[in-house]
Length: 141
Image (cartoon, rainbow, N blue to C red; front, side, top):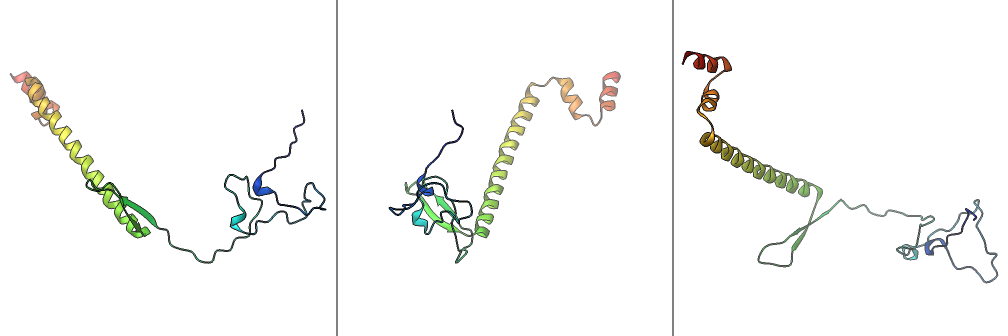
């Protein structure tokens, strides 16, 4: 089998005149240039080259969709980069507080279970200031 093959895609081909010589274009020629964005087909293959001029640069915008319980249709709003950063920091702070709340609840529940089920020696060891103090209490009694 031959390892060379010709792949023809929509964005890489153009109509030719009826008497044009068909075949590959020479590398010295400018190649196929896309004249308009309307000439590009989605899924039509690679684009050989395009001249693009940026006329105006808009700031980065973020789309926020908020859905409430009483409405099935979400409310959308456009945010600037600064507004998005402040909303993100508020959200992160809210998530951190919720995590701390759950951690504190789990800690208090574990401490309660430990206090209820722990043996007397464990409670004395926890209440002592240092291991030496605990061992002194054990040897003195």
